Every structure is written in C-alpha cells, then in structure tokens.
Length: 401
Image (cartoon, rainbow, N blue to C red; front, side, top):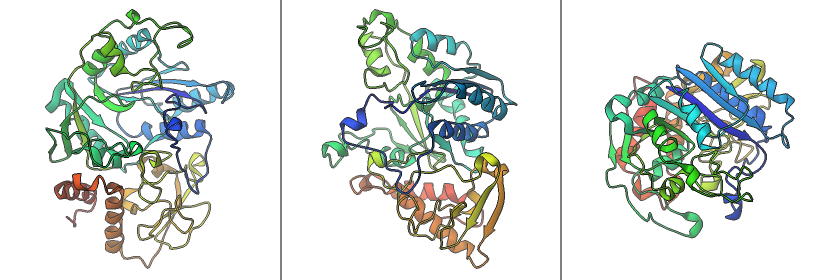
C-alpha cells in the first residue's frame, strides 16, 4: 500500500466554513490546542509505523500567513527521519489541479492507496495487524475496495441506517443500506464515498482523477485565482467536490465496496463534537507530554490525575477532556498505541488493580463510544456489538464476549 498525504496546514477553515455556517464548532474541552504543525508531525509519526508502506508520497503545504516558511525545512527533515526506511517522495506544494493528481498517479506503485487529505487523524492501534488484514481484502473485493479509516463512532452508527442530519432536526435515517452485511472482520456495504481520509484502490484513484476532462468546466477568477478548477480535497472545500465534478462532466463513477472496521484504528485529534459525539464518549486527544523528547510517562489505574503524565484508567467514569476528574484514555496496557512504544520512559501501574475488572470497564468504554446518540441506537445490531467487542478481545486470548 502507498501512503499519500495531500494537505494544506492553515488556521482557516478547510471546508470553506461549512461547519461555521451551521453554528458547529469543535470542542477540545479541558485540553490545550497545540500548534497545527506539531499535530501534523504527531500524526505523521503515527503513520510511519502504521503499515509497511511500499512508497510514501507527502504533499505538505504550509500557509505562510499561519506558519513561517522556515518551518518547511524542519518538517521536511522530520519526515525524512521518520520515513528513513521507506521510499519517500516529498513536496511542499499540495495537489489542486487535475494535472497535479495525474502526476501523482504516475508515482503510485501499488494496487492500494491510503489517501489522507487531513493533518490531524492519528493511528491509535497497538499493532499493524488489523490494518494489514483489512488491506488484504483487495484480493477478495478487487478494484472496488474502499476502507473507512477514522471517525469510528460515526462509521458504526451509520453503517446500516445511514446518516441522520441532526443539524436539520432529523430523527431517523432518510435511507437504509440495502446490502449491509456483517462479515468476520468487517462490515460490508456498497456506497459512493469521497472522504479525504480513506483507503482506495489505484483503479478508483484513476477513475476519480484521470477519467474525464475537468478543463471543460469554466471557472471565474473570483472563484479560483488560477482560473482553473481546483480540488484539493475530494469531498470539496466549500465550492465543489469530486462527486459534483464527475456529475457535471458526465464521467461515470466506479462502484465502491465500503469496508468498515470493527475497531477504532484512527481518531480525529479534535474529536467528533461536530457530530454530537461528546468528549465523554469519544474525546478529543492531545500530544502526550514528552512525546517528541522520547520521554512519555504513563500512570495506569490510578484515580487521581497527575499533570505531565499520560493518565490511563478504564474505571474512571469521565475523560479529562470532559471533566478534570477524568482520565486521558480508557484502554488497557495491552492497547498502548504502537507509535508511543519506543518513546515511553516509564510506566507506573497501580499494584492494586484487578486486570479482569479493568478489561470489563474497557469494554464498557467501547460501548459508550458506539452508542453515542439515541436516534442511531435502533440501527446498531446486537450482532454488530458482539463482533466489535470480540475484535477488541482478540488481544486477550482467555476472553470472549
């Protein structure tokens, strides 16, 4: 699989003010807000170990009005270091025109692509095994394979009943998935998906960016300074998205088979408050103190919160982002994110904890992460719940739900 980042780091809205117009904001609660360049570096560090990449293509553009351009060299050197054992193609300009995407196509040397158009989705799994397992489904589903990566609570609650527009006062889905199926290690359904954080095949990429001529669409200069159609993110940035372009130029879209994992693999750094998912269900996260210095300290199973440490306690009823009496994470020590492991200097584990009890509370936190809104709950099958919990329990061979 090839990793493709295509991003623009700025303090301006990445979606043309879509959420702002709806009166929706992200909520980091009690967490601080790091510089976006540091968030990007944290994200990239997580991807560096997430998969044995065949090639890494990084188009990382910085907004000079937000980040001084002398940081560009610092970022380039950081990427060269964390991807030192990978074939790396680096650019400080992102793709915006069709010809840019065509040039990138020529660099793709594998059948599967992880396309990431965001700077702030973090790989949180404790190993690469599940992601590799899902990517291997290319053999089963062929050129139509599409894998959902982040936004796990949303992906689970919409898999069967589709999206409920809570902002418009909807109380039930406007449509249902006709071919929804629970397989051994994933949810199957067909859907057209253009999220800029998704795993697709090279054939889908070709259909999206190479088939059809975008130049036939006339764009006034006040819309795009270049006078040509621009598409930096596939879902669009407040003007037009890939689906709209393909429709206007009468270029048919390839069929997609959408795979949804049974486990959270990636998380949005700022959480999902914009989808009515609170910081006490699936919270925003922070960069661990000491991460960039290889000096992470973890406290496990303690009721109190200690600044300067990563506090982990599945039994705590709250997350720190929601309430300062809470904990940073509710996973167990078996689930420490893979990219943290060589940066940990100390783990202080409460000697009085009951490991089985900690696991039970961990599973409770998983359920709280998938049952996030009463309108969606009728569309989450009991069978799906069991498969999700058993996927988490795979790391504990003596247990089954």
